[in-house]
Length: 376
Image 1 (cartoon, rainbow, N blue to C red):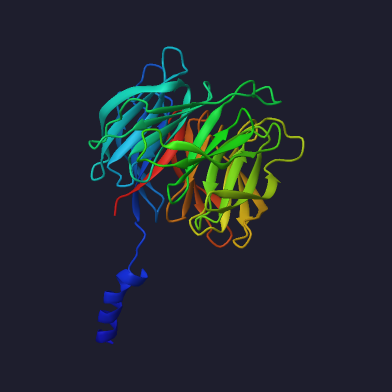
Image 2: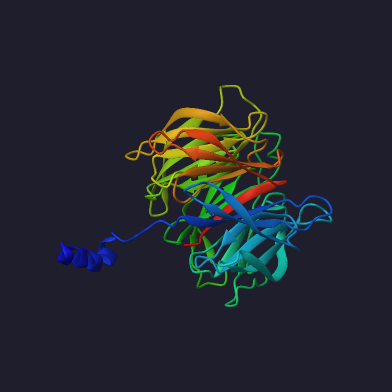
């Protein structure tokens, strides 16, 4: 028996037997800072077994960091900051992150090159950040230096066009999403009902070039907002803000094949509040949030063979769930009510995907983004 244990311990790194999921995480929260305050990023220590949290730090000088991105090594955190003077001008901030203490230290802040940034992402090699701008309808690329600081804009892509909805008078870029291999970037343009597709090469000064095909059209007045891959990367899901539905695509090496559209709300619902979506770590369930006057998180079962979604249930959450997250262990769903100023913690039944509200809450104003860092 002793020999068997020794053999397994030697083989485990090769076959993944020793891989363990961390139990403790830092939960980073970004959003809009209330008037007279500048502590826009908060860091909480989270126990994935109990669902309990404790505050570690809040960062002064981080005004309106409405979306966050972390480097792959978790040493740096990047934020897109909505301007204060005009409410639409944008900056990008770089922070050094101390995983032991949860402390963030500002490295630098630069002009982002667009108006009203709503999303930031970083490539897998940590070479560039991509920023999405709602008001200017553009995407900018900013290089990351070896010390984690951000350089000046190296590429700008400006979109044009409009859609039939009253909120589609011009382009409104809402997200950039990298493929798992880092070679493809998808851009969600809410204003023109399109997903733009790019080849990505971070050895080039201007790393984004149109793919072939370069565009995936949504239905008129859909308003594509956020994009999520299934854990096995075989399927891609797009939540539509304006029509409050989710579109499903089969994904293969940068190519999309349409599978399904499923409504989040009853037919005729016109509050246009589709916001965020996430797949459970085991790939069995998809959760999607809707705002308007609904304020729900909707639960779907995922067919892993074809990616199709089946409605299961919906849950009341704090007002305006613009952002939510599922913890990396799949034990809890945490929903931030941007206007309810409350973050709700739900226990997930892993067999059914269903949620039950816990007594853990965070009272914090205007949170829009939630990110995880494993501690152990």
